[in-house]
Image (cartoon, rainbow, N blue to C red; front, side, top):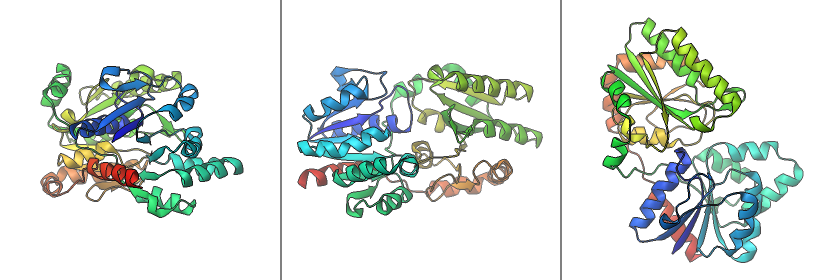
Length: 359
């Protein structure tokens, strides 16, 4: 069996790119031939079978010549999703993975013709995986056959290596080791509905409010994509850093501009993981924290796994309340976290591949 995975591959490190990297390693350990066609455009390593696609405009014509048995797409581009059904003319086995609310938003904002084309494409392809039940329900409502949709969250257990730990800078470890209570978070400087998508602003306010209440908590925020921020994002990032100084909490917050680094080494040293996003899918970082038995607080921006503490999206008072409650009763939450079971979805995906091949 030969698999082509089309999607982002680190760098930069993000939920989907980490998922693809780990799935590639899992398949290779099973002696399965896998090639990643990287649409992140930054990384190309033919010897490792990671091939940069350049631009999708050229790649869409190359798809029909790919020799792999299964083409597994992770693209969020609506135009690519519309084209997938067309490739069935060439007897390609096609699987599409849906992450987050992108499909819901595309269905909602598309005109009649786009909806028709998208619907036709989704009905033709062989299999669709989605990160939660809400996405599956949207697809069924849109007319896609329920029997070819499977909920398979993105999380795949990391392959831990000494190199991943050693790649974290010494000043990051010093901050972590000097922290009484470490809150970990990660994400990008991004906007959704004109708000801070990853809630970095909320995390800064949270640390300040905790310090006012004599709770000595520190925040380690692993920032992704700092080097590729837009002008608007750079201005906002500067504004956030200035706010930290104005509030006098520079010693309580470390924004680590993470490039080509795994997040799990930091998570393993943390007491709490917070995910204050205002839109989301089945976050790899949340699942990773749960797998490492780290208590988690997340927004209710999307369906969340059982076992996390949930606060109302963009509700600062609720975030403060839930965080204080957890810190003040930490041993209780820490004990609960020990018994949370996290599924490892690499096996589920491999089973889906085998099912498609048989059909």
